[in-house]
Length: 180
Image (tube, rainbow, N blue to C red; front, side):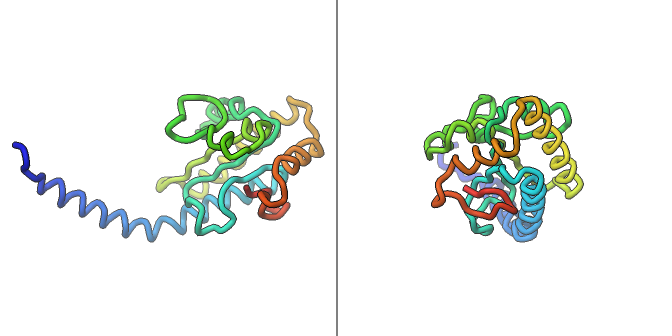
């Protein structure tokens, strides 16, 4: 009937919101820890990789890591990783069905050679440290394989990463990779 409030739905929504708020306080630090572990592992393996997001950890989404591997084709990486049981994306979640570089990266002026090698990695409640280590190992193998397949040198990759951003945009240190 028109105008009748769904009281049970309102109460259920309020309970869900309360539970989500409580769980968030517990989950955010763990998601951050796992995201940072994955970033650290990838940055150590690929110092030329570019990580997108604010420099301050508290301003970054805890369950999201966006990494670009300049000069590589993310579509090939996604397919290879999927075969190994690691599921990543190339753009926003709402554009997941389109296998192309992110329109957001294009809009903010990220060079195509970097944008085309971008992966979006989501970490969630069920993700474990074991999952992160497995993903890091698989990403390392796949990216290294693509680098070899393309005949790219560390120097070419490093120059592509550095040349992609001016000093005002590049944050982080070479130890942790670039941070856009």
